[in-house]
Length: 22
Image (cartoon, rainbow, N blue to C red):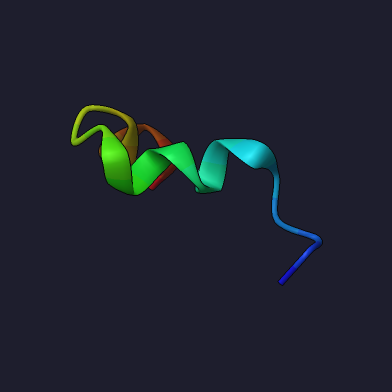
């Protein structure tokens, strides 16, 4: 989904960013 922000892409790369999005 192109509507998702750029943060959603790097999220899976950094385990610390994953909980941040949730």
